[in-house]
Image (cartoon, rainbow, N blue to C red; front, side, top):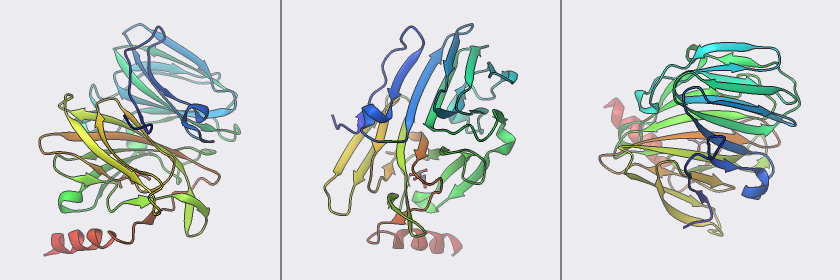
Length: 274
Ligand SMILES: O=C(O)C[C@@H](O)[C@H](O)C(=O)CO
């Protein structure tokens, strides 16, 4: 299996099913954890030097921080209901406690924090919904924590790829700290597949092909994107979901398309206009 694929495992005693740290990923900024909590189970963590975006992938929970508490938040019981999630932003040097009101799956998106902004609820109404692309590269995007919303480092987005479609396509990259042309952002993909026994295909490759991995991705896998282009394909019969976490030295998503393939977007959009 590719070193870029981190499979999930059954929940441990605190409910953790997958964990990526900057150290385990061999990079500097992005951390990512998923917890599956049974009804009544509680998870409590300190954020220390990281900020967190807690994304309720499914289920309802009470979530509190040092200063705030939100009760009975959570809307969808499955990510494939395709309604935007409730999330909670937690700054560095804070504490969060998640009490599962129903069975819950929650993603903890992490990046370096300075404590600039207070803890806040990000309700579904504040999540920007976007249909990106056209034809067999059309997909639905939920901008959970985009650069237009305050945070120190974190960018969080979820994407739904219809069966037979490609997403993160045309292939793009953001692996150069070269603004205004391109930003350096590490990225994780947390994949879910419907039906769950299916697979997705993701390629991660660089211009010099020093990285060129084409991976079969299963339900619950995390894919690391340390650099390079990173397109995703959903086979016929299988709908894909992924949650992206991005972070780097500057909090802006300035990507660069693979020049060999960027013509495809214009071609698909033009065909849609006909
Ligand atoms: O465009 C998409 O289909 C999603 C991607 O942009 C994804 O969020 C990503 O790779 C961000 O760099």
